[in-house]
Image 1 (cartoon, rainbow, N blue to C red):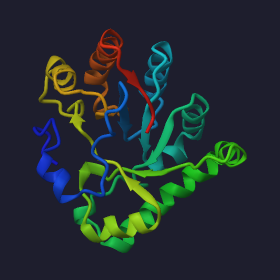
Image 2: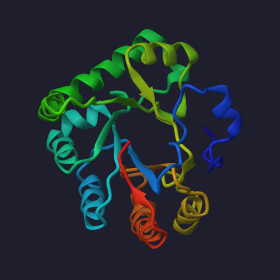
Image 3: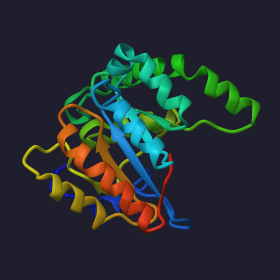
Length: 222
C-alpha cells in the first residue's frame, strides 16, 4: 500500500469487509501494532517502553526472526502482548504463488505455536479462545490467498493508521503527526520494530504513548 496513505481509505474497507481495519469504538481503546520483529536491536526497547506506560500491543512477527530470536518471542508473550503472523520470509502476496504463500504462513505459524504452548494451555484451562491473527507484509494479499487464510481460521488484520516509520524520507515529526492527528478510539496503528524504522520509532513511540495518556486512551492487544 502507498506509504502516503496514512489513513486506510474507506473504499478499501468496503472492498474488503472481511479484513479488520479498526475495532468498534465502544471503549477508549486503541491498538498499537509492531511489524517485522522480533529483533534484539529494537524489540526489547519497545517492550520496556510499553511496560513503563502499562500499555499492551500486538506484534506481527516474521517467522525467520522468531527462529533467530526465540527468547524475544517468549518475552513478548510473557509480558502479556498479542502475537500475530507476518509470514516466515516477509513475502509480498501479489508476487507470490498462493500455495507457496500459504506454506510460508504455516512455517511462521509453527514457530509461533512452538513457543506459545504455555499460553495456549492457559487459555484452554480458562475456556478462552486464542485468535489466529495475520497481517500481510506490505498490506499485499490476493483474494485467493485471503480466502485460504480465512478458511484456516485467520483474522486478517489491516490498519486504520500507518505511521510511516519505515520511510526514511519522512521526518520523525511527520511520522508523529501521522499518528496523533489520525488516531481515534478503535484505531489500529502500524509501527515496525525493525532496524529500518528504529530512528523514527525511537522518536515517535514515547510521544504517542504520552499522547494516549493525556487523552485517556488505552493501548490494548488485539
